[in-house]
Image 1: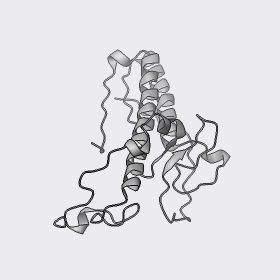
Image 2: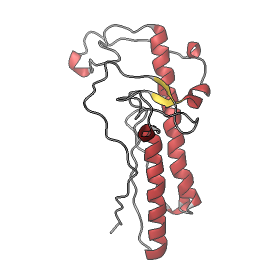
Image 3: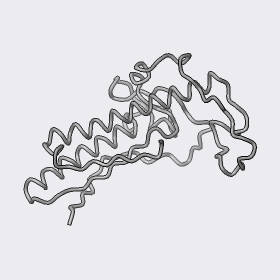
Image 4: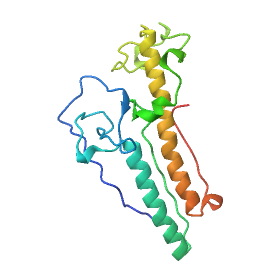
Length: 188
């Protein structure tokens, strides 16, 4: 039987009383560069002591704590452990620390889709008609598409760094060579 740990770092509940008029895109600040960020930039854009980290940073920190507990339990009882960690990025809204954007090519060098619209034969039910693109049958401006793709890449790089934090901790704890890591994504 695998031990189950239910320790979790506190995340403030999203303020469901506010519906954003549009999604927020672009760099967010977190504790890495010393400026507060919103709760993943979705519901609240006002910095506060309770909302100073992006969700994937909280998730990776939580995973590191749980790995430490699991490694201690494995060392003292011999029980194997299982840990599942689910990161949010690169899903909307595209929020990430500024340094991750700085590592990417300039926006004007980002290539966009060769075919930027859905074929008219594709039924509307196959596409979500919420922001940022209300209809898939009309192309967005090239600069907008470049910005979205650039921010998507930055989100991937940010999330990858958080996966790296968890894998680094696995290595520090001495479990790299006796742990099976399965990485699954719904983004290709």
